[in-house]
Amino acid sequence: MIDELQLSPEILERLSCPLHVVHGTPDRVFMIDGARMLYDWAASAQKTFTEFADGDHCISNRAHEKDALIGDWFVDHLR
Image 1 (tube, rainbow, N blue to C red):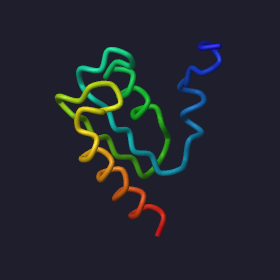
Image 2: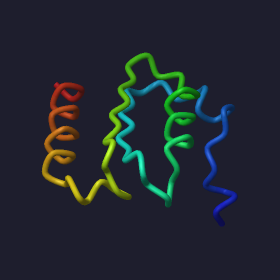
Image 3: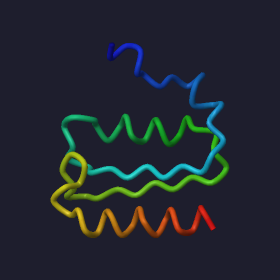
Image 4: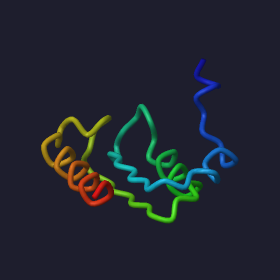
């Protein structure tokens, strides 16, 4: 099933909604290079990339900061 979940450049070049990629640099489940590719390939005109240098997978070690960041981003984009 994992093969069906892969985001290719062809899929991401059709992505036009605002996008915020939030990622932890040392994450070993989904590598930082994959997060950067997702961001780079997305055709969204409004893109934001936030990297937590010490963030674990899902940035659970800085959850309050991450959740506030994402909440603020949604407020800005859903007004």
